[in-house]
Amino acid sequence: MGHFFHAIGVFFHHLTVVRWDMLGLAIACHGIKLLFRSYAWRAIVNKAYPSSKLKFRSALGAYVAGVGVNSIVPARGGDVVKMFLARQRIEGGSYFTLAPTLVVETILDFFVASCFLGWAMAIGALPVHQVYARLPDVDWKFFLRHDKVTIYFLVAFFIILVAAVVYARSRWDDFKERVGAGFAILGDRSAFAMQVLFPQAISWIFRLGSLYFFLKAFHVPATIHNTLLVQVVDSLSTLFPASPGGAGTKQGLTEFLFRDSKISHTLLLAFSVGMNIAIVVANVIFGLIAIFLMARTLSFKRIRVASQADHVT
Image (tube, rainbow, N blue to C red; front, side, top):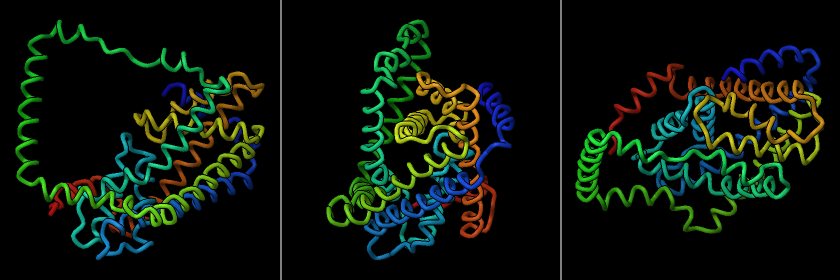
């Protein structure tokens, strides 16, 4: 995070030369991307609840609210808000059903992001051996040196596992039906292709367009190659959601992937942190508006407490 705060200083130093017209286009593309993604998620949810259709404005509000919270809360906390807001507008809604819809929504993203990562490795921008070298090793000696702690942990885990199995068996049919409903659209290939994959493909065009305009806004050479590298940075940062909006992680990855370019270190920092701040601010503003209109409160704590108290039927 120290690296991120240093980058903020560099960003403000370059603030006077930012092309605001390009920055506006980048944010506009980002907003349009959210519209198409909300449309796709709505189709997934409506297939799960065919008798209780979720209106587009409700899906958009819940989706944008979740994106906004994810920008400032680590570990995908916005997904809880997204499901809570959507559930309030679906008769008989269940978190067991809404959670799988979020998984279905990421299928195309996983495929496209994997292609981009493979491309980055193929051109040497992301060396495979360096990636593996950075993967943490598991120190199994810790469990041997702390045998009592290990035994207590295993006993507790076994008790929780047995309790979960007993509970699941008692409500297995209902649980399986609710979870299966979240994947219902996968059984309708035509609907999945036209209502989910197609709008998501369009959202990817606007996502890349947004990155392209961000490059232009901060005077970084706006090429297809550089746009794809920035997308690889974004894809990699989502694998480590420990910091809100990927703060710090994106700056380090940007420097690493652009290490062979002739772009100056300070310009890359200004671009990376500037884009990060712009997207976070836009997401938060969009999210706050959506949360207030749907939940009539701007307190994430109240929403979380309400979601926990909300009985799942």
